[in-house]
Image 1: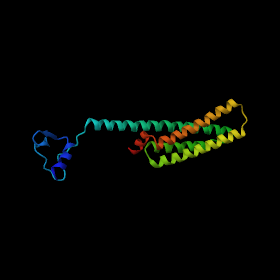
Image 2 (image 1 turned 180 degrees about the horizontal axis):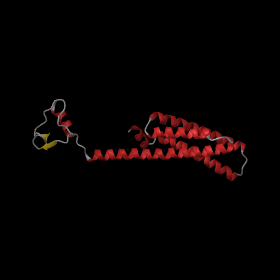
Image 3 (image 1 turned 90 degrees about the vertical axis):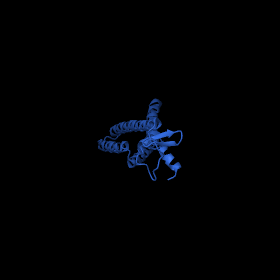
Length: 184
């Protein structure tokens, strides 16, 4: 190995030393490096910048986990509210709603563990939920005759649900903190 390649390796070594006559030398031997493939005494120098980057990446991952946790809890709460409304309206037992909540909790558990397959399933289910919310919104306005104040409140609830679902899709696919969380 030529001197130039050895110097490149030595630049990132904890054992390097600067000599005014010879340039970078080994602090263990006080000599110019003589290794061919790799140095047996090489120890990577961890600079403050590298440590700062590790801390910064860790903070981003934690922030991504916090965002995901909060949106997933919010989605479960919305599902519970939606199931309560449907049970009251349809006069049937809440078994299907409880089952869907349990499935969501299991999927969200795997999403928070960073499983890509769970993320894909959750995004697909959220897309269907947005579609069904829009269909429910349209059917509600076609069949119900209420005062305009009640219609405005119901419209805000439907738009809030759609916005929350859309934000969930954004977090799972485009938020930089959440992406770093999945890549850890």
